[in-house]
Amino acid sequence: MRDRNRTDTTPEQRTPMKIGVLSDTHGHLDNRIMDALIDTDLILHAGDIDGPEVLQMLGKIATVIPVRGNMDYGAWAHDMLREEFVDLGRVLIYMIHDLNHISLDPATADIRIVISGHTHCPEIMEQNRVLYLNPGSASFPRGGFKASIALIEIKGAHIDCRHVDV
Image 1: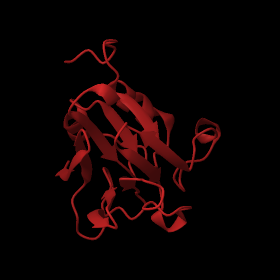
Image 2 (image 1 turned 180 degrees about the horizontal axis):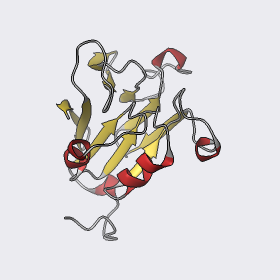
Image 3 (image 1 turned 135 degrees about the vertical axis):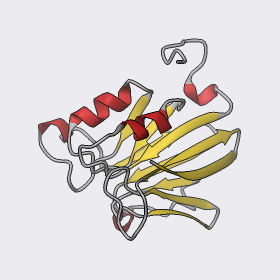
Image 4 (image 1 turned 60 degrees about the vertical axis):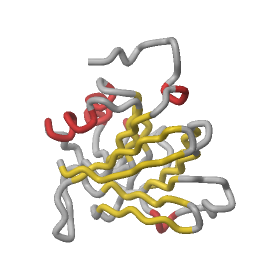
């Protein structure tokens, strides 16, 4: 296993950078999810975590940046933001749980990737040079989809994104 505490470079400086994206775990993480995330440099969770244990387990793999979903309440989620910006140098990521509550225009804000959850359905689409990514639900998929996460690989300004069934 790689040393996630190495100090020679930050994850943002490494090329390529591999990011794991998940949402709607609702308190459940099985080994297939953990295995799919094992080589990531950063993990982004788009909400509906349903408990701090999920974040603690993911934190054993890589740094985790979550946003608060509509099912994330209580003292453990009190300080969690509903929107988050992740600046990776040449790529700016915006995260929100429910895309219907977006508070800005990503194209005019120089955002390259918008990550959301809530629907439990995986989706990747591009609009106005912005990549919109919903990883689906890692634990409770809907609409006939399988449980899934997404993996993003960033090399400079190039972005490669795909869903992974878990």
